[in-house]
Image 1 (tube, rainbow, N blue to C red):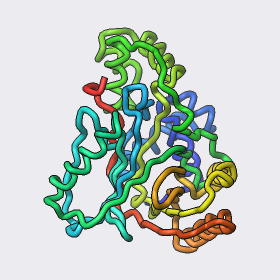
Image 2 (spheres, one colour):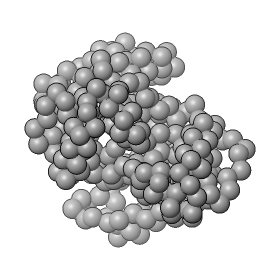
Image 3 (cartoon, rainbow, N blue to C red):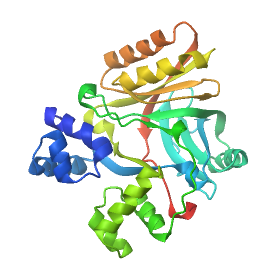
Length: 320
């Protein structure tokens, strides 16, 4: 799928702002409503816009622990749907090429849930797991889609380590709205209102309140990058003194157009950069920049090329 300058401008803005009204998107992007609707329809029909997602403050719902599990499965072609449970939310699942061929990000309610979940994985994969490693992110940031043009990209960075559990009590309407947004994040206010038997102004106020209280954190579009010949990889870094680099890493990640997300944490590799890029030259450039950034204390790096990324699972009403 070929994209022109207008496409790139619009996709960059819509990535985190698709829930805005068409008139507001028109003002921000200086595109007509007809242009926006026509191109949005094109993105959806082509499969570029695969899913509209709502990101929730998972600690608020009791999911206070985040883990990344890297798996080496001897039968990597095996495609098994890994279900959520009452105490485990499977957030993302990646098929990769490298030392591990499957990466799962989960949120759990307790550390004990992690141990039980590892046993479940062995059962699900019929004991075909050769090896696994666990990484616990302490700080995690998700960035805007800035690979087209970082200069016109709004800073919609989501830093998950800044999110705290709060004491707000959700009522039945809040819960219904969250469940709707989890499954249909692009649904218009009038349609949500119809589903819960209230008026659109009521729904607008409730959603705004959930956003202000950091229960609904943000919205993003899950892009099928293969449609535009874009690629994803992870750069895993092992450093000796992580504390000295935290601020430098944040500044670098925020200002580099190829950094899609990054985290610092506990594990064999204590820094992860997820990068998005068009071609091999861009891939080499950004990996070199990462190595140069940490060259004084870098111990080892490892690259995992992402073959496929499944649509994320962000929430379910049963968790409330």
